Every structure is written in C-alpha cells, then in structure tokens.
Length: 140
Image 1 (tube, one colour):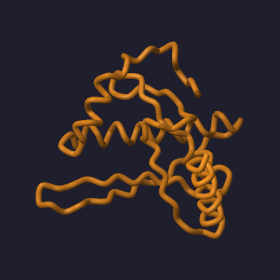
Image 2 (cartoon, helix red, strand yellow):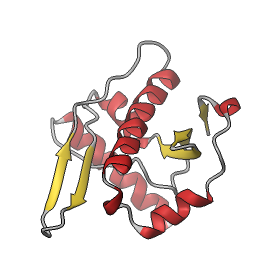
Image 3 (cartoon, rainbow, N blue to C red):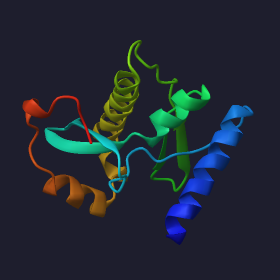
C-alpha cells in the first residue's frame, strides 16, 4: 500500500544519506516493528526492532544510541552514547549483538531516569510477559 511504499522510499533515502557520511535516526525501541529480537528487559520479554542494526551493517555507518530526557528545569538533555559494535560472524549474530547492546543501554536509562518514562510506555511494559530464558536470542 501507500504507507509501505513511503516507508521503502524513506529507507532508501536513509541508506543514501548514510553512505554519503550523513546521519539518520531510527527508533529502535518501538513496539511496532515487523522484525525484532526478543531480549530480557527488567525481568520481562521485550522486543526491539532490528532496522537500525541492519541499516548500520548494510551501509557501514556507526550505530550510536541517543537518549533524550526532560530535566526538572524544563531543559532537554540529549545523551549521545558510544557507538555499538557488531560481533564477528554471521549477519544474524551481528544484528542480535547490536540490538542487545542497545537494549542494555535502554534498560540502564530506564533504571536511572524513571521520571522520564511515559505512562503509556510503562503500562505497555507492565503487560509484557515475564522473561523466559528459553527465548534467549529469538529473532522474529
């Protein structure tokens, strides 16, 4: 449909920008990504999209986590973290490594800055099933 065509065009434009040394933002913590990896997240099963990892690997661009928070003073803080690094080996292992590194950083941000978690995100988190170690490394 029209939405999938628009999305495909955006991805091609993102690839072009990255290959030319530019910057592109992808939200890896969205719940509505068609392809994702299920990882433990504060005792629950949480999915994280793999799009950013695939994009970084296919373009050679760095995957740099960025977290934004609202301070009590009303100022926004933008926290640029060190680049994520892919593991050697198969593409699926590289993708999973990047996603897990991002998820670990995202979990640390949640734990350190509870005041910046939106209520609707917290409500979704509370509806997630408990972590099952049998799911370790499941890519969907």
